[in-house]
Every structure is written in structure tokens, then in C-alpha cells.
Image 1 (cartoon, helix red, strand yellow):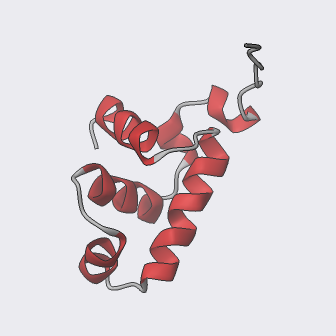
Image 2 (tube, one colour):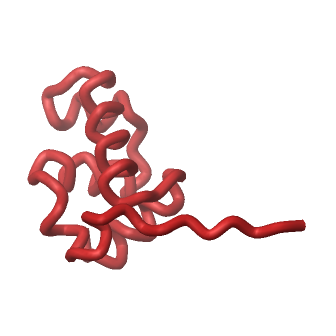
Length: 79
């Protein structure tokens, strides 16, 4: 088995909360609380596609791949 190290995204070296837009933080907060994309969209007054776009941007900005990692991040940020 071989391991591949991946360099963190350049923006990931700054404080994650500072990198995320307020609506991205809000979407992350809902997902970390266990809401579905549809529930998050309804709560935020958006379409589920917009929520998906926010979460894809969060993953790209912070170099994370899974919802579990996003949830861990939200908890560590106190969201």
C-alpha cells in the first residue's frame, strides 16, 4: 500500500472561518447539524443546487473531501 501526500489548498493555511463567505458558513452550520441539502435550502431560502454549490466551494477552498470532514471542521470552528 502506498500513501500519497497532498499539499493543502493555499487558502487552507489561513483561518478557515476567514476564508468562508457568511452564506457558506451558514450552509456548513446546517449540514453539520445533520440537515439534508433540501432542509438546508428551505431554511436558507435557496435551491438545493445553490446549497450544493456552496458546499462544493467549501470543499475546494479548504481541501476537504467528505461531509464528515466538513462536520468536523464546523465543530472545531464552533459553528
